[in-house]
Length: 392
Ligand SMILES: C[S@@+](CC[C@H](N)C(=O)[O-])C[C@H]1O[C@@H](n2cnc3c(N)ncnc32)[C@H](O)[C@@H]1O
Image (cartoon, rainbow, N blue to C red; front, side, top):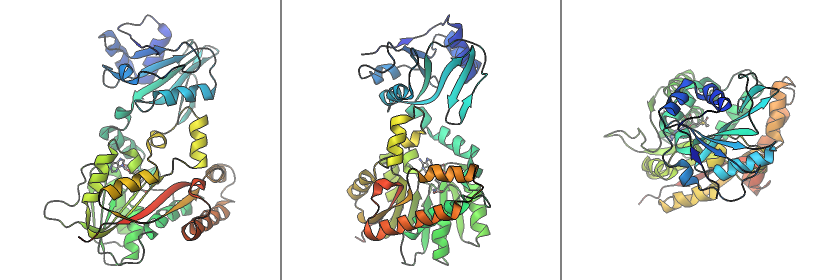
């Protein structure tokens, strides 16, 4: 079993530089107080035995990462093996290396060279406790900071696709006429708005942990002439709807949210509590078993936390059935690799030339899947399903 050692003081100038660049002086201050980052110096490029994750995380000071120093020149596959070995206790968010005496940091946002001078032996993985990465405050801040991005950018080649995905989720609700609609983890509100547009006169409620998202959702609803809109800030684990004296909803939609939850069981309890007897639930999320996501998990050391924490749709279905809901149907949408890669290329290099063909491909595949089950779910990066709450 690999062992960890807690650093009460580090004489290692390189690590001090890395910590300084990664978290600012704060980490060094914690270090000086004797509660510094924990460092696991690995003996080989790949983990040789399962890690004792609970001893690695026990007593780690809040806000302090675990650093894993992997020797020699590990390959992406080696680093991916470390990422997997550290999950689910830790999420690897950054890698540090030195190239020609310059420190380089790699995160999901890209590679940043010239982060100072220094020499790192091998590669250092910066792993944060998963409960901190998914903590409510971190979620709120992350989505607040990137709220405009989640609203889509009209006029860009991928905007039609962005709106189509939200419409596809809303369409699964079917043709009943709904009166009270809730968008559960609404982001910029488009899923709920699409549903409300199909049900004229319905009231639309939406909530999200990010106040900025809720503000944008309100603006979007207004721009679409949805007059009966109420937005609130809150989390699915303790939803802010229905408030005291308010009725439950006859249609609840939640798209791409459960994989961000710090406590999916509590989140599902919160979700089911918003449904009136007889209500319809439409829920969708990333499909972790898609060919593209599987490949990314095998090859990429750094992945967004949701790609690791997403539940399989079968498990979500079972968890909702255990809570008394009846399954009605499901479908896949948004084709997997190489379509997302082509869409990226289309956006960045091809000036939108492939926007229509790619959208048509996605639309046809989703329609075929819904009607005939083809292509199979693993060809899609997203799933969506409909369930209902029985009347009695
Ligand atoms: C991928 S975005 C999806 C937004 C929107 N539903 C859509 O389909 O465009 C995920 C959203 O879930 C929200 N979220 C994250 N954790 C949540 C939680 N525990 N409960 C409710 N919403 C959450 C985020 O703030 C973010 O707006």
